Image (tube, rainbow, N blue to C red):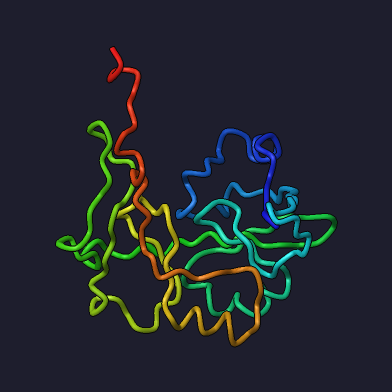
Length: 189
C-alpha cells in the first residue's frame, strides 16, 4: 500500500504556504490536518502497514507505530497529523540534518547531466563522525532528498515488529545509470 494526499487537499487546507520541498524544516505552524488515503500496491496488496512512505523521504505512521516510536524520534523531527478514513495517522517530518563533514567526499560523487546536478551517484559517510546513538537523519549533500538511519533504528523497528518499512544498505542510486545512450532533442539537431 502506498500513501497519498491530493494536491488540492494540501492547497485548500494550507494555501500557498505549504511546499513539499520545505519538508525537513518545521511545518507545525502552517500544518492543518489533511485527509490522506491509501492506494493499493502494484502487487495488489491491500494490507495497510504500520509504516509507509508518502514521498521517498517522508514516513507515515499508523497509531501503533506512532505510540511505539514517537518518544524515540522527537529529537529528529516532528509528527504531523493526517486523517485517513476517520483514523489518525502521523507524517514524520525528519528535520535532523547531518553536517556535510560527515560525508566522505573522496568516495562520494554527485550525478551531473548536461551541466546540472541531478542526484548522487555514490555516497559514503565518515562513520566515525556520526554519533552512535543517532537513529534517523538526512544530509544536505543530496538536499535532504533521502532518509538514512542507523542499525540502532533498524533494530528498534524489528524489535517492535513494525511492518511496512524496508531497509537497504545502498546509500545512493545513480540516476544516470542506463542513460549512456540517451539523446536529447539538442543532440538530434
